[in-house]
Length: 62
Length: 400
Image (cartoon, rainbow over the protein chains, first blue to last red):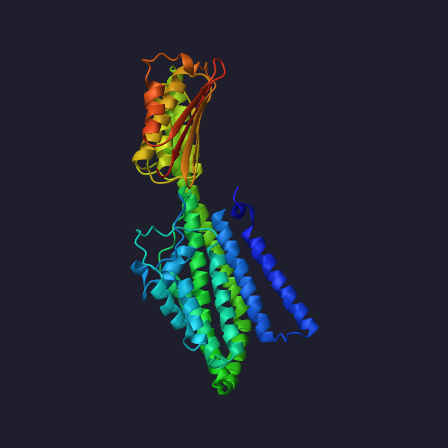
């Protein structure tokens, strides 16, 4: 069985998105970056969009 | 052999160069989804999206394969929403970077672009289902559901465009002066609504009651006419042929079948066009010729073609054999039409036989069932044991 058959694409993308959020919030708390609301919503929209895209593509693969 | 996954332009469905049509084809979504994404990004980024389009035009090869008919596919809405959110994210990034006209212009344009995209997508014919509903009632329900869905989407698209216009006017301060007039009109309309509501409610209820009464009368008249034309006529025939039990049983069976079809709201059979109807017609034919009742269950349906005609003929042969050798026991035909194949089972509880001992000159099973299915790229399997009945399984892929 190939690796791509065993990996759930939606879970993978959602996990990556949550990790990115975690890192951003950590850096914000540390004062390394200043995450403005505009950037926050841009990242949120991109993460949600990627998860939905992965979920749709995953549904097609069955 | 692995499928070709190269992203290609689709000039056959292009509005400019087929870049968006190619992306849509690759993602399996309506072309309007990537188109609106490009438009939104081009608007929000003061034209950088156009450069991206030109770059893709230059690097994407042209699609040469023939276009398949649009089919309803799983996940389309999730993919479309995902593309929309990614476009929104790109806009927000460019806004943060300062590559931006103004909120008062871009957001109304974005809303209007989504609304127009939704309305344009509704002008195309609805995608087809891979498996069509089996009954006319189910097809009618699906059509009605689709019409309601398209109406809702059209309403949403119109609301988006109107909302974009209002947002633009509000951002420009044009609505401030009209606000008082609109508020006064709203109060008058609300007052009139409160006054007229009880009258309207009573009128609507009386109309609904009258309509229900009319429908009940029509249904009763239809039921009486149907009972007279079918059941009463059959009962008269049964009385006349009471001395022939086989004839009476056949009459009763035919009437039962007709009554069941009528109660289920099934349309007249189309054995030359639909595979489910062709199988049912074959079972009825064998049943009337041999006088043995056959139970038929068909799940799903599709158009009948030359290959499926072979499957129907093989099923008919299996039914005929079952009726010959299991005249007393129940005979069942179960068929399932799936997206990629059609499967039929003919099952009886007759005397059965040993398939290894069938003489070579008996060609019914070998040629009319197994050979016929194999010539069409399908497969037939006969499972039988003496005294334990016979099961014939027929499988035919929808495409070779």
